[in-house]
Length: 136
Image (tube, rainbow, N blue to C red; front, top):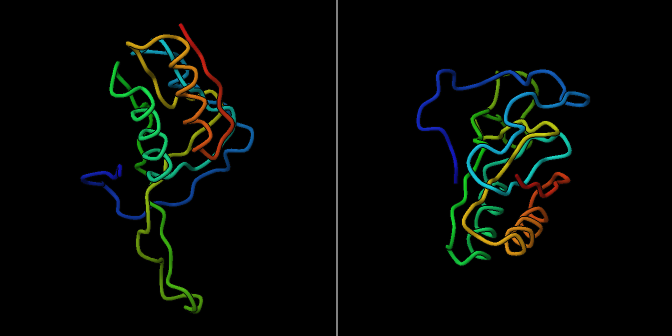
């Protein structure tokens, strides 16, 4: 799964709410001819990204090329169960990427339109956000 090799700060603060924000970067297709675009906000985990990637790779039978346009670099901490309040922040549990509406999640090239559309539909079912298929 995707995790950073090295981080500047081990634990981050939560940050602002993603409720009504829209993405300003990563909204256009840069590498491939087809893409999967997020329509909702969510903190997407590395496991969810990996699940969608495996679905895409399996469906296109390793023809063409896939680009993953997001990377989980935000550490999320968690304290063990039944621990009282206080005594500092918990250990890093997993990594997420804050996804806003409009962000391109995956891109694909080298396959037909029908195959790309079906593959992205299957991958979209693995993700916790509503998505749409886009093409150049």
